[in-house]
Image 1 (tube, rainbow, N blue to C red):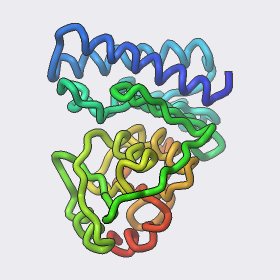
Image 2: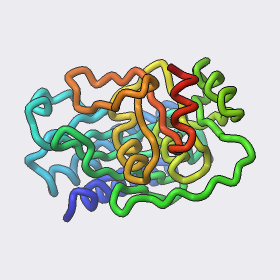
Image 3: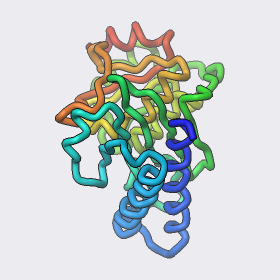
Image 4: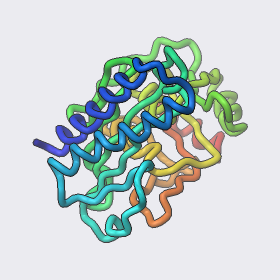
Length: 241
């Protein structure tokens, strides 16, 4: 199996158990906690079977310091968007599985189980043409940053509240929105796989100051993020810097 195949298998395995749990009568925080644990177990089983020598950085597992000297590290978010997952009928949550090697993101899969889709780095997604009259900028449902409003004003755009970070990035890839502006911080597992998929598709992805995104750092905190169609990048970066 290629690394992308392994990422897909792990993401699909997690997505399957998450959908099964949704049908067992649980809801809210109870469903979210059960989903976090079950998805972590599903991904860990695939990686242990197919890439047993690789290190793993996961939101739902203790940090393994071996990853800092390892050449191959899987960066995983078993359930990105626990809140949305716990709300009946919502599809804006995701499963992230990315491989960091050689100092960068090399392979990834993002499952959107609520939509029955998996986006991968190879083959890369084809960006649809945008038909919107105004650029659409994805923001947090609960904590839209002020900088996003400035970005929208700079390009004559509109804000679109969506769920998980991973879903917002893939919404740019899928053409649901044209950009995602985030400030206030997140962890590296929140964006590693979606950013890898976005870059493979030809989108712009960077910090808000335009600097490259870094992964597998000792401190997995990522302060901010911009993912957008390349034709918007210069104007959005100028607005948010």
